[in-house]
Length: 581
Image 1 (spheres, rainbow, N blue to C red):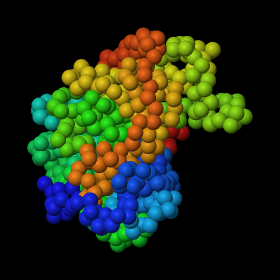
Image 2 (image 1 turned 135 degrees about the vertical axis):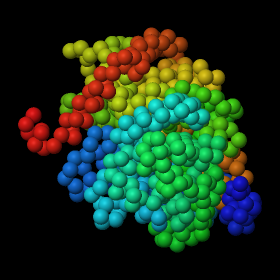
Image 3 (image 1 turned 45 degrees about the horizontal axis):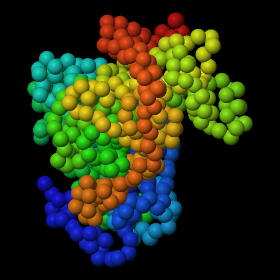
Image 4 (image 1 turned 180 degrees about the vertical axis):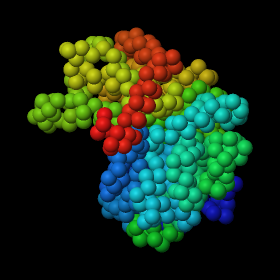
């Protein structure tokens, strides 16, 4: 394996990485989120964040109709336009450099992270299929975002076949493969649009596609290959397994997926002339192997030691942590050797909806009078509802909710599940439901923590990154519900900082990610300890949450699945069928 920072495997010294100059050197980290790309300029010597830039994706998330299209997309689809990602390179990176006030010539490397599993179907040279005229109106030619959950039937078949065949890799994923992942989405593409599947030369994680755009070189990263691509112990599922799913799927790995895998912190290549023109950065600087927003944040938080679970809380939440030993945790998203840090087993779990749930609630369930009251106090609607909810005692609202509005990632791994709020009366107010939803996401995290604890992978502390850490009520609720000390990452751009740390290693400024994390990682911003009285009260509510969780998620009542089927049939009905109804 090559030494990070040099394509030929020769370790670079700090002096070489900085060109032998005493002038400060910098790296760029770019975090490609669900709705925007965020770039940050970081000083290599100490991790100081000197400037940032943000680019909002013009097409955001496509769930209704394709750009310029008239046909409605089926239920549970979530697509994106890949050129929006290039826009972040063209706009957010130059804006960050300008904001920092540095000379671009002093930048020695760039690193990126992405949501996962987000998949791009491309031609042999990396052109996304949706950019070809003949495929512009094909939904399957677009990026399938992480929260595209329409491949659940394919995931169910993968899980059933793997369980029947006692596939060795299945326990590495908690016993279930998600509909969000590479194989389920790829099988859906094949079975619903064989022509587009045949035209696709590469089925590419967006984390790797953006690096391809920067370097002109396609390198798969070890993180998504392991967690999302069922790559374990140096191999993918075999052709016999794939053919049993669908005979036309037999060569999926060799024909569409398999490629050279780069290790985290290594250089994927050099910045191309084209990408240098986009970003304003020097041609030839190091470009780090791609990574995932959650996993790259652990070094940014200096939380790479075992027992520290990092929760990256935004539209969804991803939970990652390192362990010294391999263990099987029911419902985890995966465990990968070196998936976060070389030499340790990286564990992942997650919740498909968190900030998205809060956003849905304020967009659809809060009356105008609340917005007017918030505006009169110069507050955003989330801040206003949080202030109202903070005045309540635990349990005062009389509600308990399930946080499944976007399905369940861990520990049930079922995206056919949906949200529930129990206890509504005519006296229930918006702030009551809002607080119940905040608590529901904390209960979901506790369920994940308990799954790890019961599987001999103890969680000793919770470290939170992402946009939601600014909500102090939410952070205290998480500490009270989980019973864990909770600290928040000092950086407002944790994933971007983590990518900049990996860029520093790729450029040879540090020997490895652990060393770079020690120098460039962020100190905690705030620390929350559980309040004993609240913790006891939440134990009672968590028991009710667990009863509902098991009744709807593990029991014989599959009403949520039946409702999904009814909804899907209604949406997929032809216009004539709808008019008759």
